[in-house]
Amino acid sequence: MLDLNFVRANLPLVEAKLRARGADPASLLGDFRSLDQKRREAITQAEQLKARRNELSQQVGALKKAGRDATALMDETRALKDRLDELDKLASSLDEQMRFALSSIPNLTRDEVPIGTSEADNPVVKSWGEKRVFDFEPRPHWEIGEALGILDLERAAKLSGARFAVYMGAGARLERALISFMLDRHTRSVSEGGHGYTEVLPPFMVNSKSLFGTGQLPKFAEDLFRCSDALEEGDDAIKQLQQSGFDPAEFGRFNDHWLIPTAEVPVTNLYRDEILDEDRLPICLTAYTPCFRAEAGAAGKDTRGIIRQHQFQKVELVKFTRPEDSDAEHEKLTRDAEEILEILGLPYRRVLLCTGDTGFSSAKTFDLEVWLPGQQLYREISSCSNFDNFQARRANIRFRAAGQGPKGKVEFVHTLNGSGLAVGRTWLAILENYQQADGSVEIPEALRPYMGGLERITK
Image (cartoon, rainbow, N blue to C red; front, side):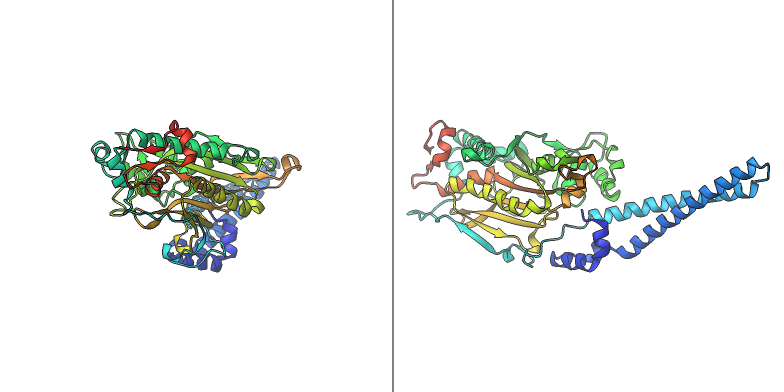
């Protein structure tokens, strides 16, 4: 969430940044100046009336003490109370409108983020690895997996419908091996060649406050799976929450559980409404979780294979940093994800997302795209983002300057996150890059200890 004072003082800049994202400032901001002015006027009037009420109360007390008639002043005091009640209601309404407006505004992209409208405008800033040259026609992962009997999409559809997968035998073990390998690499100390993250195993369901904190609500409610009970009409409940601007007072009215779309949500919200000690920063956390996405805007896209699923596994990286350190930590986090690809020998490229392709909460994002020879294209396998203090404002995550005691300066942390990596997409990248002419798949050397020494998956 953006700071109200910043928006007020820099409205032309905010409007320009929104246009760079391809958004219409008028539809997001509305008549911001008028709303802000009415809100401030209501607050000022209320303060003036409260001061007058206090003054009258003292005068009434003095008159009564002197035995004189205070009826007129008491009548004025009662009138003031009625007017104050009206102003309080107006101010509360305007506050809600302002908060809803601010919660609907995306983060402002950094100046170094290129202007563009889609992924076609994302510049490649780095490439790694040599694309393998096959002496046969490489196949896509869904053909390889089905032929080996390790991927069953037909039975998954019988169980759950479209966009689900069942992994069998060595396929299931490969998924588990990837999770363990990634977590081991990320949690091993830097001195041992790891990345020094602390592992977290969070809940896989969260409340609305958590989703609001990281920016999924209210804008992306349709892309989430909400757990409703039999006494509710789920769609109406969501609409009521959206219309309320996701007022925290409304949260308790519903069965407030949502399946997480990414571990970013529970892990970032671990420190919601807390003040951290500066000495603890940066805090670097990693978590494996399943992820659940409705993919409401993906109808007809990637219907073959396991590129776009309602349920998939991911190892996530999350950081809480001081503002002055977040750029360097963003680069480190991105490198931590890249190193996984390099150890596995998977060719990839790093792209810098343009303004029109940058996510709602992000100020700057690098996407890592892995090469898939069976489809002859690059696919996103990790998004590594710096959110500046956008999420921290929404979730109220702050830190206190070191060495200054309980009265030290308090400011918002910067939050960062990225996939380290999306496990399913790493799984399919291995199948496509390590496929053999006889239909088997070679296991990358780094994964063999996690596969019981298995060197190749055969039918």
